[in-house]
Length: 78
Figure 1: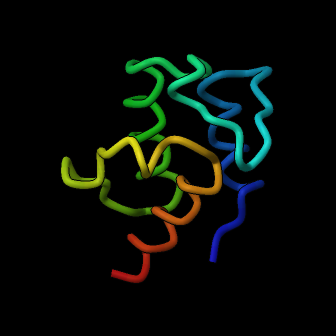
Figure 2: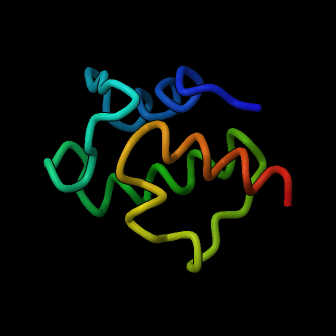
């Protein structure tokens, strides 16, 4: 199982200086824009060897660090 800290490390590569809490809203608050979300999709896929499909590209999977972590863990189990 991956941790929020591992997700934050990947996020820091995409957007240095961004250090949200596990439950901070990432998209609605504008911390991440659509380009950064797609960069994050690619980086998470590479880092954790998971395939994030179009079906996974739902806001609920990307709205917080905790949600991202849960998605990565779920995809690894599949």
